[in-house]
Length: 123
Image 1: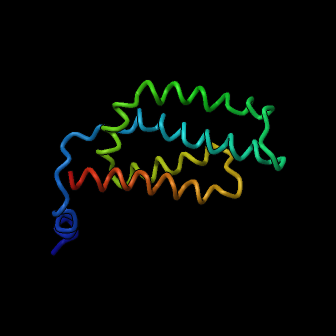
Image 2: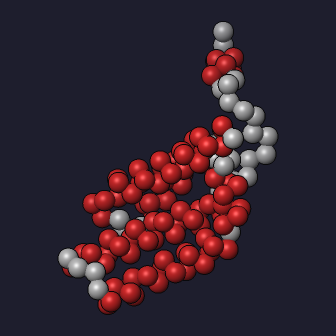
């Protein structure tokens, strides 16, 4: 058996996905999550979160508008994710300052996206 057949056999149990939707709107949602996490990390750097930390929500509010604007498409995109797209979305954390909790935040986003992917396989 050549490598081409082995690859086909490996993926033969997965449903066909003839028209992949991409991740453009879902990226906005992931940016929203990571910018919220970044705002939280920056706010707690001094040991307490206070009203003066409201300035840190600037990036979050910009991402909130984009995420809400494309929310319905983002859900469809989430249900059509490939493993590679999930890893690319998780890697968006590199654009944010998430401090020592970065691995935890990355894991949270990865689990959320894998749950959407798994749900779509069984629905």
